[in-house]
Image 1 (tube, one colour):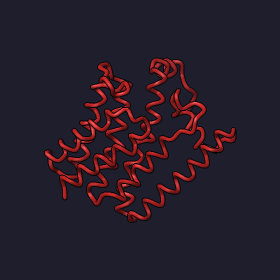
Image 2: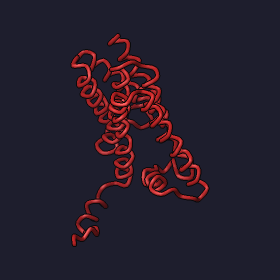
Image 3: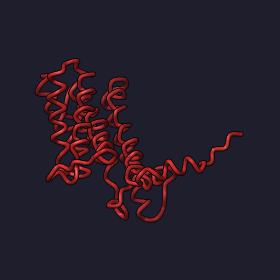
Length: 209
């Protein structure tokens, strides 16, 4: 039988990774799952996608409320604790709620393909920017709440690639990516999950329609 225990070499590698980066990996792994929403909406309809997001938000809200009362819900509470940042300790963690709401706002406000562009910007632009900033960031941008040039560039690149994949138009992709990178710079904390898709969806809608 294969031994699944962590070896000393594995512990050394994991231990060499800053805890902040490890938390960010878990957080953004959850974050990018929102990228499946456009496929869900396309395959089963917007109403179904909205219903799934609403149900997931309700389950998470109940789970998080119970966790704060000292009663953990299997898997959900564990993932929440693992992905929590220092500022989140002892508080209701809003990130998953605003993440789902950001996708729902995109589906409600914008037609296709602008809605998909907005959700992909939320999933990959915001997610990759945060991860790249934590892992590679060295040059801090003033008045941005500690965000970095490296993270902003990563956001631009991620949104450009996803938007170009949807539109096959480099000019639209570049404009949307630049807008997303600027929006991501705002020190809005968890509200960026709402502002990022709303802003990029608006720009995409204007350019496309």
